[in-house]
Length: 439
Ligand code: PA5
Image (cartoon, rainbow, N blue to C red; front, side, top):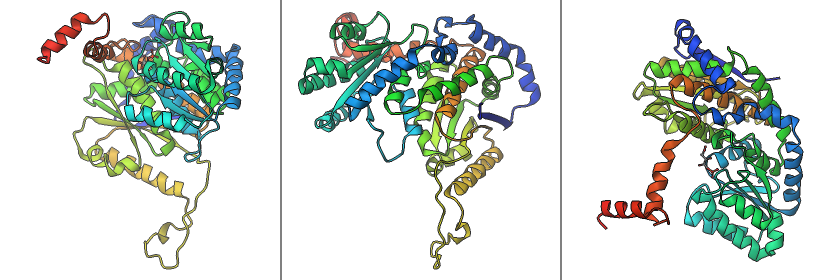
């Protein structure tokens, strides 16, 4: 059963504001569930948890994962954006902070850092490594560069045939350079369905395969998501309430939402959430700007702005009730650091007081607050959180009046980059950009 709960009692949104949004929020939910809104071709994620659990896909993923687990010390996941952030978020949330998973999971193709790639190839030189290359379009430049380099390295190290056994591609069923390459080279492949967009794909093989290779329970992850899917199937769900509340705040002039965690393992969950909401809602010159902070760390950097800067911000706190481990603050007979007043208390007690104290200060300081609580960090609760935020994002995008499932704005940088790199087919743009730069 779902342990996730949402508290909006400190969100500074009135019952009447929410009641006034009931009809449009129900229509927005209907657009997601019945696929009647803009971008309705990209709603495959809505039933993904329940349908995947019923199919043989989980067994196939686990079989491939166990082959990579037994053959590799390190598996490099190559992908960017939605083809990387979900797996990274879940693995970071579940793994021991200081001990790598077995095999360890590294990421590449999520940047074009030359030093990053050089240091990665140095690191991999003595390792038994494999590659999961993930790209829905199969044509994205960043992962394509990383894959070309690491594929060549692996082939040189173990030979072409063995490399082909250690490479798995996750891509479109028939389109794109990666699909053609995978077919030619005979790689094991998984399909990203046409109707599942990148940032909604963590519960497809895009996220499930790396998570399974890292040794985590993808059935439990899907179960948490599937139970949340059931909970979100009717009006009045927490996801719909979250979507309504954040839009009510936006209409009141709150233009920035920060996702706040007090659990260091959730840093990349914030990164995943930023992409989900940023790419889904930031369009047509509208949209709440999604930011994320890791507290209490960021209370010592961003805390001042949040408490006292321009009042255009609200926060959504993810609170994790139980920790897996216990660390008690010891007594000290000298008490030179003055900490004996909390001796005998758990570190998590202090963290929870920091969380509560900060929330109260923010409420007093004009930062509306929503609280999303889960009992502990595990596969099931992460599945619930993922689906909760995905469903809320779809509803919220429709409330905002945008198509939540496209991303036209991300093409502009690519057009300029390809023009600057003189990519074949971009001759006109290359001439225009060179003229603009006075070359
Ligand atoms: O959400 C999205 O659609 C994007 O972030 C993509 O996931 C990202 O651009 C990577 O694309 P692809 O998987 O086609 O390489």
